[in-house]
Length: 221
Image (cartoon, rainbow, N blue to C red; front, side):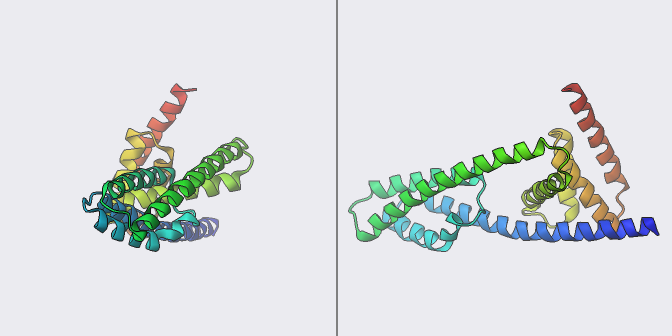
């Protein structure tokens, strides 16, 4: 009975974890799609066309300035592309009201995202302080789930089956000795096992990755 209860508890935890990952994946794909669209706009050569397109882009993605959806790398990439776009617009002929408005909006975004990036850095610093307290296992495990969710969102982009995500996660756990990839692989293997998949080969790879991770920690001790 105790074993059955534990399995049901783990299954419920995994279901909640995967639901959160699906939500994060959907949101992450939206961010990546928006950034890729801005990258396309930055490649335009006609300043008038750039002005119209980037104005529409701002209208669609303005909420990013108030929502915590951007990673530091996203902010850096957006800042660079907006700088390129601003250069293309400035090099164009004339200065229409629409052009001036877009230039002002670019300046507002660059200043705002700079402040957002600062907040992210400060927040990440506070997390490292929390992690130093090993007695706070609830917060530590919650943070681990969040990191695993974000990793799943990154690895699953463009893939059609969970096995492909698991394969990449195990590779990351071995090559990079990534602890979060190791944990994500374990979650995925257990989920697949509960759904009737043959996971023995993946379990062997997981154990090998775990040994490498332990050996790496021992070497740096």
